Length: 215
Image (tube, rainbow, N blue to C red; front, side, top):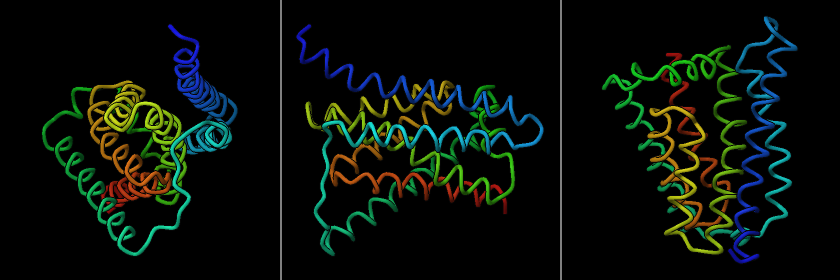
């Protein structure tokens, strides 16, 4: 394997390792320090926020596709339509999961949901719709998809980043959901090359889900 290819693999791999270790270790530490005094979702949110700051610094230093130009009105309309489409996809996938019994066959999915939907409504919105989506988009769209798009193009960067996004959820139900959503999120990032686009789509999708659970 050539040094160039080895370096490319390392530039993608090490931020994912940093993300995984920091995120989970900090979450475990917070849970141990504040056992019974802090909701599990707050522990997850704090761990994600700290990890996100570190990963954003890494993202800023890596060679990734970026578009710093201000979009014109037509492009903004297209972006908004793309975001709406991803939100609609997320709603559809959640409906399918809720009405097909998929959620019942995965203990990992149940455990994950118990944490993600603990706490009050404000906590759910802050963590699930802002903090976690921001960190995940930095890692999977910004760092993984952003670098691979620069090197290999969107035909490789989008499905690979979506696959990693799904795998890192560690249960089959969330893998399927995250993989399909990751394809859509990766596509809009690759197309518009602006990290806020998949972040907005990801956060709004989660917001609709959170609102649906509290109504």
